[in-house]
Figure 1 (spheres, rainbow, N blue to C red):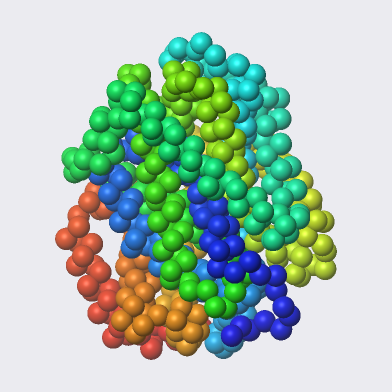
Figure 2 (figure 1 turned 60 degrees about the vertical axis):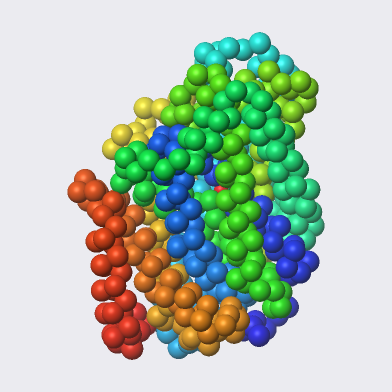
Length: 486
Ligand code: PFF
């Protein structure tokens, strides 16, 4: 039951979508970012809030996006435009689609730089450039790797080209084929690293660090970071999941698929933590070492383990692949929109997008060397891309999507697409109408600088606001719908 007139490419059934969506979700966010922000924000308590955010905000938003994509059968702009016009509502909502598409593109512009780190470490492992390095050497190597714009530019350009080649090949040949073997390979590598960690001496400390709850170590900033990261790690509000949803066959269950992706994503993040922190603790390093954490720690583990070079090479191959399966999903919205609307082939769309991407990502890359001083309000261009997307565009886009689904579009659309029992449907509706919007509003309050009053930590207040929102929302529902639709 779709609104589409022409047949659209589809995944090889639910499994194809599942692998591709998991490939999009599992990426540098899980293996590079999750461990280092967990380290910075104090461990177990942060992990608990992150898990709560995935459940309360991430899962409902993801279900909504897949349903919007499958029902609208198009890029975010086209899908949303179709659905609002089908419901007889204002076309201004398609701005949400534009924002999601732009957000995916902007994330990709800095993501290729980090993915470039992964490729460059792969090369270092292969060429023996890390052999015999001490803990201090590792930190110096990370800094030196960034200081040379030609070196860093080379690697991020390589990632840009690889992304565009895969995307240009299309949904089945390019995206599905790559994900098929990359995901299982990554899990095997993480298991091997965890196995090593168990014998390395730091495993007990790592488990305590990740899973013991110490409310005192939880800052308001940490809670907000956890919420922002829930969006990032599940690839939400960036056009990726919505566009992938548009290729999902009608029979596949959206709820089950979403849960599988969310569980796989979470398991990989926790596995990455269990692989990395034993090395950190066994070597007396600080868990709060920032973005360089995995690049400075894991090579130490590889040095110490039997067949370490082999494992190291395989690990960085898998990390680079995980980055690629995410980066291809970030431009899919743009490519789908260009090829559906501008009468150009996927290949042409990919190359033209790639050129613009290269220009923007080069500016992001320069933030680590020549452009380190080009700052605005203390942030480099790279920092701005990260800040604007994760603190503003993703939450704003997520908020728009849940309001669109909860109050504007026809209920029938979601009843049919989600196919849930009445009780589960009611729960989903409650989440998208009230729980997710409240969670997202908390991020904005932070971005506006109001968290100095520790807003995020007052659970009783949040609960009270939720009750009031629900009462007001349900009582004023028809009126709210009219206001949102006009
Ligand atoms: N989920 C990816 C990760 O955790 O690395 C990042 C990402 C992919 C963000 C796709 C946004 C997106 F559209």
